[in-house]
Image 1 (cartoon, helix red, strand yellow):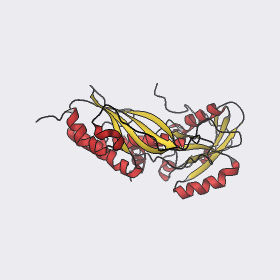
Image 2 (cartoon, rainbow, N blue to C red; image 1 turned 180 degrees about the vertical axis):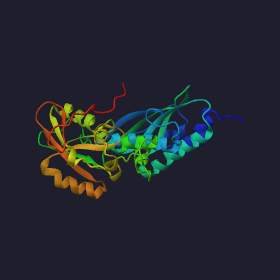
Image 3 (tube, rainbow, N blue to C red; image 1 turned 45 degrees about the vertical axis):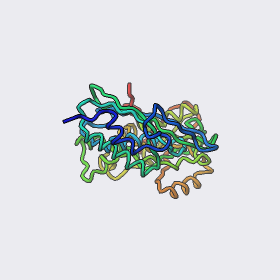
Image 4 (cartoon, rainbow, N blue to C red; image 1 turned 30 degrees about the vertical axis):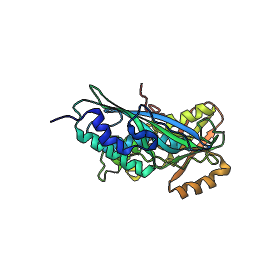
Length: 314
């Protein structure tokens, strides 16, 4: 059986995904201009088999997670997606069906989120599979939401539920019960909260990829202030409550929800905006003057001692 070449696979699986700026994936680079009067927002993320996804995860789910984690970075900046480039490094014996599934996953989420591929690269590797994606978005000039804008007294708000991603990894490994597959689904398919972080309502924002406590700490350091979170206010799914793994929910990664600073005077407007977006949001604490650190208060009114703050790649 003849193994398709790199160029055959690009033509068969990825050229149909390309937008106009991708020039039919037939040139060395894309040619692309932002919409008039808008700023580019650019982010990049990588995923490695065995670290960010499991060896037996289906290729379509891997592709969708890769795209969605990058869309989450745009969501945190209050930006809208325009297009993306991706690099795929796989072993030479990777079956053609894997590429078909990967392209199908990208096509599904391209349709859902309204963007097209602009280019990228395919290479071979001894393993494991290594993927990266660079995403391009757009925002009105000066209206990107940054990490550094929180002020003492601002409320700490999060979208969705917290902890499902980390618990979902355990579920995908069959290490915890997950009868209906809810947790594994949350691990495999993040929900990028596009449209939520509106510049006039959200002072500071980032997505929760490495654990709530750790990522909230990034907002604190960027603003030079502290944060106090009430564990009792943490929004947990029914599945997470049943498993009762509070520390993992606070410090585990892969949620891809947003943690935000909202001025007290804008909280009602923000809640109304979130409801219009169809996104659940919860106030879990307050930013405070002081050292840039996160304090989590337990149900007994005392600070919790956590064994770690979150995930680290090094």
